[in-house]
Figure (spheres, helix red, strand yellow):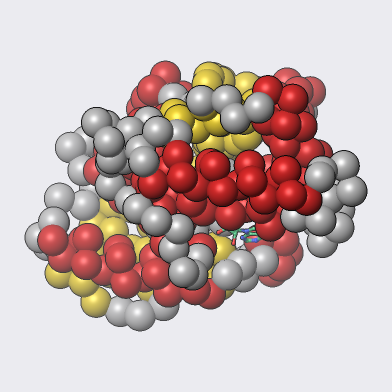
Length: 306
Ligand SMILES: C[S@@+](CC[C@H](N)C(=O)[O-])C[C@H]1O[C@@H](n2cnc3c(N)ncnc32)[C@H](O)[C@@H]1O
């Protein structure tokens, strides 16, 4: 796949679903599902920064064969284009599984193994938390979101929405290692990776965010908080060609990752502009040829409100 003419964030999130599916930590996921399946019906889940709805599908899939008979799900994202993509994708996905789907802002899925409602909200999670006056949730899920936030602030805002004993399911949190293979030029590869990580820490529009070491900071935070850390484990992204092509839409996913790197580092005073442009062009050619391997180290965390 050659470099796309335009980049779409919902397409990036949709393309990353297969990458996440391989990466998610099985121990953390299994314990999360077993514990939410023990809750009285309906199970109530709040997902913040829910993107295009991949975690909704995963949770419905996991609960359908269990004794749970009803799920009340609220998915929130600050970007309306993500919520609109999630609404359309989940509508079609549920119908394909045999559910009858009705409703707009809240979809009701009936006639299937679970009685499901999914409420879609375009909102800042901090505003949503501050104005919440409904029932408490059995679980708060946030996948690849706490990297963008100050962890203590997000935790303190969302904790009052969780029932006592409620679960924090926090997968796919970046933890400080990026690797592109094969090497282009060792010193430049290392510099690009270091500056890319630094750019995650120094986002002027998101002061105090946990950034490149979010995964380990989550462990530290939940060990020190009133909550109990139940389980944690690695969920590294490993994107490899199968033969000469990448599975699913993962060539697009790789181009979008390179686009993030280019957007963050173009014009950086510690990079020679021509050398960096040549580095980008080489990495893009490696995607086109099915030669690039990309690895990002991440952690999944499961904790319980005290
Ligand atoms: C890296 S994406 C992850 C999306 C999805 N959870 C996934 O893993 O595919 C982070 C998401 O968090 C959302 N987000 C960032 N800050 C937010 C906030 N303050 N409130 C709600 N959503 C937020 C973004 O719009 C984006 O969709």
